Length: 205
Image 1: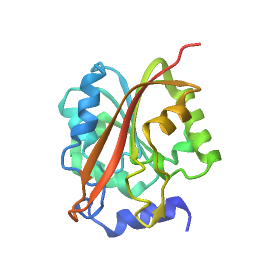
Image 2: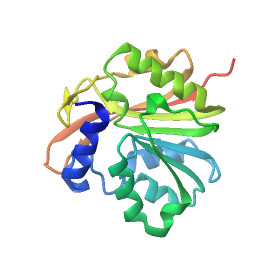
Image 3: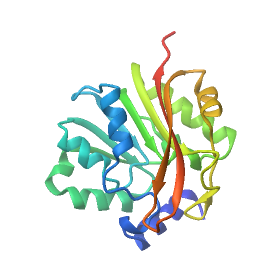
Image 4: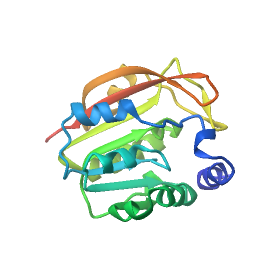
């Protein structure tokens, strides 16, 4: 089963509140948006956004240039249905992030819980190359990934765990670390998953 088939099956068989990453309000991501002073007209991309509520919050906060990308068409469809007419104010992309190629530069790159599913060096480098290509010269990035104290698997798939040094070192070719924090996420099943959230700014050459 390839990645797309796997995630389509997940989103076709489980409700949002039945998946481990469910958050009724993505407090940590929103705190980073505020701390980084992301402008209301900034071009934002939510990588692996699925049908999470991050886009809902951004719309309510007055952001006007939002792109949500997910490998699952079902996830995107569910988010659009939930948002109703407001979905027309969002650019939706069904794609593997490693294959992204659009004629657009983003000012803010947000990824909560997609990056850790890239378990080979080739996949990671493809991702980072795409991010570097699509981020504006002054662009900022937030990546939320499983920490070394977090799960070793998620949704039946192996994941790669990170600490502050390994994640910032991996991105150091193109991105400079701003801040990292450790966060415990409580799943709908009352289990705890430890996440590492790090913010970065794109290096200028």
